[in-house]
Image (cartoon, rainbow, N blue to C red; front, side, top):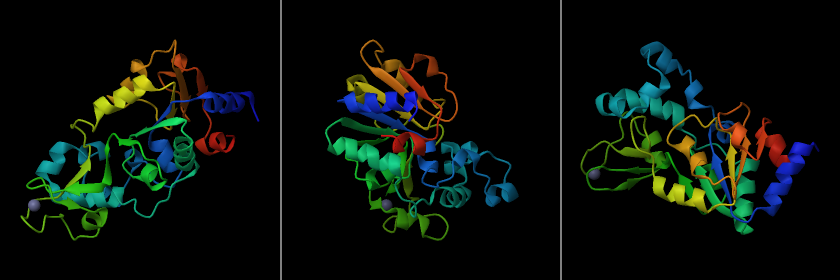
Length: 240
Ligand SMILES: [Zn+2]
């Protein structure tokens, strides 16, 4: 094992209030494509819009039919299963070493892996509701319906509880409290470019809290990190 992986192992072993922050790289390890590189046929043939534009609050409001075509094609993640990162985080939580996980991913895989304290910062495809009277709907209700999913009681368009571009993430205050409370903050599979999540690193007191970054590419916060690993997540987690 290389020195850097031994350092990682040592930090995780010594950690008592570890907090994980996970991004797209953790989902791609389960085989889920990163939607930002989504190059769906639908989009190529019908629009010249970026995925970010098609997943914006404005597009949802103005073009719901097209929004849901793209949403269903891009985010139907029901078939995917947790990987070694999800299961390790869940096991560390059960062992009482981990405060929980903040995730930017909307695929629900941390919950599927058994993690209890999961802040789904950008929401999850598994929660959907009627904006009129709050009735709840499953992912099946949304992904398996024809066209626009509508509330059977009032006919309003069902809203997936995921953060669209131009909207505020969920549970930001809870997330910042966890960040302030952890002894090790472990960033996994995100380049820390999306705000306000990227700011979590700034809430750390680096004199008393450790920052670990595991990401393929460099990030703007690498220079602040106690440990920074540019390896794939599978290799890193197999070393634990
Ligand atoms: Zn309704």
